[in-house]
Length: 350
Image (cartoon, rainbow, N blue to C red; front, side, top):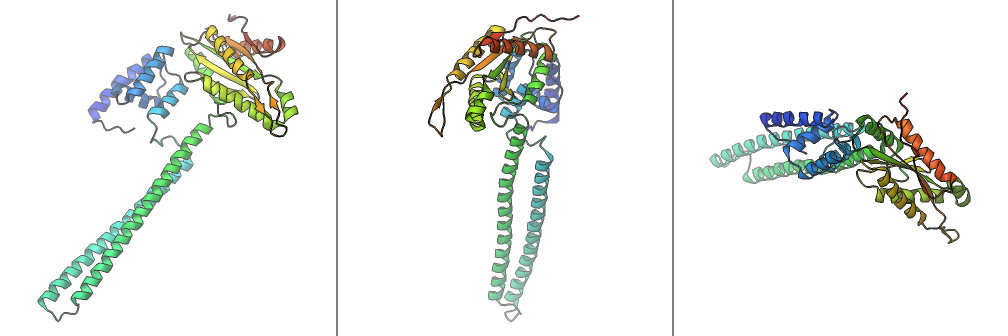
């Protein structure tokens, strides 16, 4: 995203953006400044629509959604905030191009000087046919010098082409590095680090719309691994991850909680909403069919248990997770492959 406003206009946008950020409880950091500066400038209508929807749902914009909006709408060509290796690579490229540009400029100066000398020789040849340099030799020297400057320019163009490819590779590496820090490699879901960050923020915000969470545990997973092997176990986790990714779209946050356990954070969702989603996920997981390559047998005994809890004002991360975990435990105790809701959302403030 490029910003080309005059200083007065940029100041006006910033003055408009800051009160909006304060009013909507937006953390004052560079990423959010960019989001809200762009929002008030109305340069990216899709960003404005997404932010409006987010504000209507949560009354603010949680950190993870801010990052997603930034990546989706502003960061296509942005390399700010990258790791040191990427920045070092870009600095090396810049230095190389500067050196090469200096070489081309030097070659151009030399060529210009040689042109002046050739012009002087032509003048002398016209005035004195018996001068030292013949017309043929002057033309030959001009051709040689012209080819030299052309080759220098071509070398520079090749350097630019190579640099552009390397910059694109660095940009892709930077994007991957950012994603890897937040993603579970096996399932492609967010990792526990993201879960901890987001649930803590949701609790700190104490949003009027509240939020719910679902804990998911694949039934008899250890026995499945022992029976069919870890590769088949990984395949089951990948299938479950694929189902969660498909059904839990933004603003829901699907996470691999650890091992065979998953979680879903549902900003703005009621207990009933969460129960309905959990039941849909349960049915989808129950329908998983995996063919074992060694035997050709179809494995159809994959199920999962679900514990659902909703945030109550005064909850801590620990109390909310404990309620969801308790519901999950009861789902296991009652026969597995079922959804169980929290028993109570009352908080002991004593």
